[in-house]
Length: 163
Image (cartoon, rainbow, N blue to C red; front, side, top):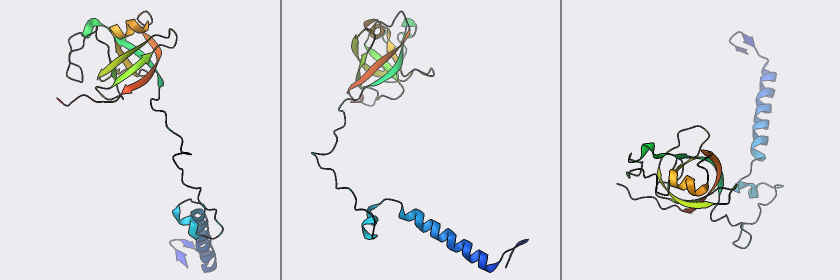
């Protein structure tokens, strides 16, 4: 048997094909799936989780992120929600959280917290996840630092109506 410029022994080719087939079948046999109950020797699947054994997810998971604040220089500029930016409002910009949702932001160093409504997209600086209004930053005590690690906990995720 020839394959291009290669000369292959027919017996060696059959052995190689059988070996590949055997390895493929062995790999399939180690996979898990609903069909494993039909293969003798494989363990039965674990019992289905009931409401008594199922782990309940945390209702409001919190996340620690790096936050900065937006000063008064952009006051009046239109935000992603269509509203004008108000430095005295309790608002924030986030790349990931839904527009219109409310989150509780806590400064772990001071213990201060504030509820803000997400009304804009940003910050567009690498490593930062939240851009607070100036008033929200004042309430958290991060004005003097400019950037701080904060804990963000969702309060509700109702998004704003489409404009």
